[in-house]
Image 1 (cartoon, each protein chain N blue to C red):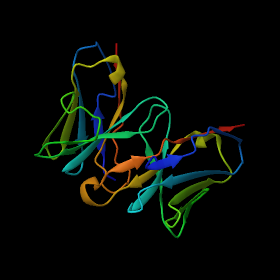
Image 2 (image 1 turned 120 degrees about the vertical axis):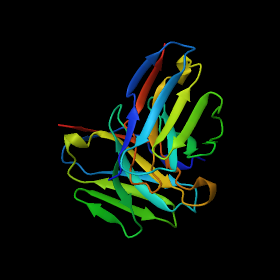
Image 3 (image 1 turned 90 degrees about the horizontal axis):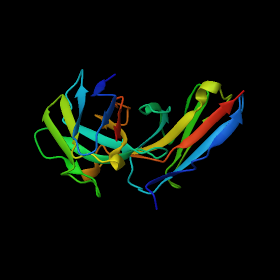
Length: 113
Length: 113
């Protein structure tokens, strides 16, 4: 089983649509969780951190369910500029893996007019 | 926020030659840096953890003699791909991120011909 698993998509949605991405992780001791965005041939950029209480940043809402080891990202009112690959990322904070980021394979989103 | 500078952004080299990639922390001291590799349409995979003043820690399956890491100062880590082969062609990214806040270099696209 992969440490971090995502549905690779691709997701093709029209502008204005709402789209949700899911992610599961296998290490129950994982401490911190993030969604990153990666544009083609670029480095990943932090989109938002994910907290158990859920957090929202504009059109983006992230949720963490520790019991189910599940992370989600919801994008409302999709824009053309949202087209990118979305990476679910887990940070290990203990032992020899301290500071190690584990990336999911990414979910490709294409928003079309 | 913290800035990491990676150089070069793109390099094309002949098979059998060596290529050095530099990663510099510009406004902070980084005792630990991480080197990732990303193949096309795949996620980032951690190659090794670079530790200032000591040997790097390599992930399983990564040849330490092929991917030489040097972290001689608190602001510079280098990755040297020795005797490069076409299968080493990839996107290499460094990070000085211990907290998930996205302190990544801009990446180096290596093409071995």
